[in-house]
Length: 144
Image 1 (cartoon, rainbow, N blue to C red):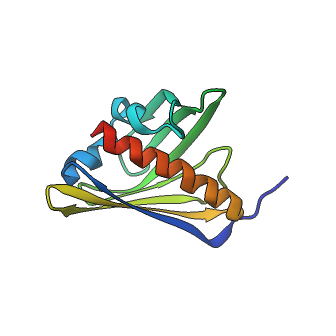
Image 2 (tube, rainbow, N blue to C red; image 1 turned 120 degrees about the horizontal axis):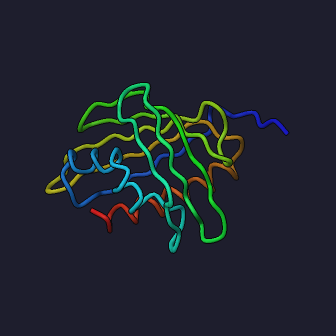
């Protein structure tokens, strides 16, 4: 079955993180650090993470939700340390052309991270990603 993405469907999450922008930015490009926070749920794990941190470079993250592996991969579209990351996002639960943008802004002793993901097949898929990203950002807070 082919899913047709709706360009209008997007999500935006906002999280204050207890680290400076450079450290937060680097966390998203370090495979060992990614493995510490990119789990889709509490009790999940990341058995595999690889990163080629350059525009046009690829990443691969295999998340495990406790019962199965869920592969994710994409290509880096924009790398502006320490302020912005953009990358494609492909998984069994996403559609072609989905893009994630991370905007990092200094705030006090920490960083305000705004995560935006564009293009979902439907509202249910978007809402599932909201749940997953919310868990990931909570784990990032703990990992930092």
